[in-house]
Length: 330
Image (cartoon, rainbow, N blue to C red; front, side, top):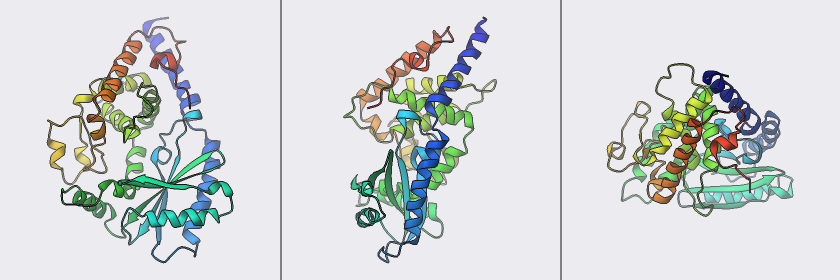
């Protein structure tokens, strides 16, 4: 077998691994959809909510909404985003009330708990094997995105007492649309990048905000440059790894998606930059940039995985052997 044939066979093997191991099954999604559609219908039709809790829009966000969730034991929670009219975050009153009402919906295991930080509030609960997070946001009837961005911009001022993160759920539809407009090959590489992310040796007690989003945006950035031929999975994954190998110097700003460029996006002395294409005031790598140990772990793992790809000569090498560490669900 020639080197070229070997590479093509390796690509085919990896494509098969993506389908069988990393892609969510349609049956799983259908069963979950039946649950959350009932919840959405309840929210839209119930008369038991106080007048101030007017539901304007319901949608699925996060990896599930964007279509980049992994399958099997690596499946993500379902983020159920509820946008309310004429409200301001953090909307904990809504979550507390909804938690009581959802118990009346008919199942004991609907009982959830409200949790969060100053920049993020949610209600978590389970229905059978499915985990759901209800995330509230605000809705504006006109110029929705523009008004949300203005709120986030205002919150970034030193004098502000608001947190811009509390407005992030309000941009869910824009975020989902941005990911879904990417070519299918990009979304496949994103799933592989997320699997690789699970294998980076970072202690479980260290939480990196936006970790999954970082994998998505670095992949999209890495695959923007033209390929000399159709980009199979391994080529795209290699580009992602090459970007992650220099994570500490990344300067990713999706300028064409912004109407206004914030000064911090132009400050090359505060790298890494991985600015959200929907929210130009959110550098999702900000927390990682302050955690040098975790950042070094990502860069080291990227180099190790690139070395394995460079040494790849046998088609039967599994996905786990390419990445180096099999993921074990906990």
